[in-house]
Image (tube, rainbow, N blue to C red; front, side):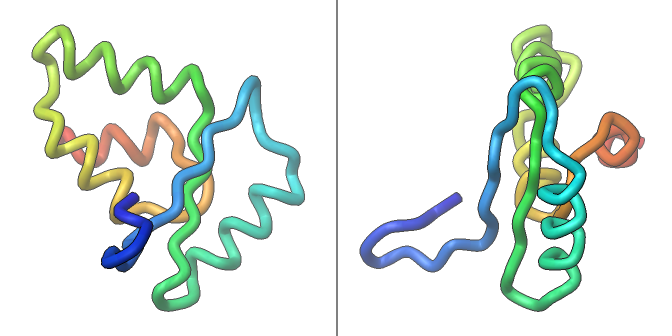
Length: 85
């Protein structure tokens, strides 16, 4: 998110289908604990669910963007739900 000339990435998001290998999840969780090395794994089905929440006006897009910017490791439904409380 926000990479290229003149940008300083605040997070890296990887989309996986249907799911991620355990090694990828473990590595992403380890990286998420290091400062300035946010790596977020999002499964395609969870991404689609988040998009539908926005389209159906059940969620503000900024809530979803905050989750994508602030979370690290494997994004789960449980982690996303915490942003809606």
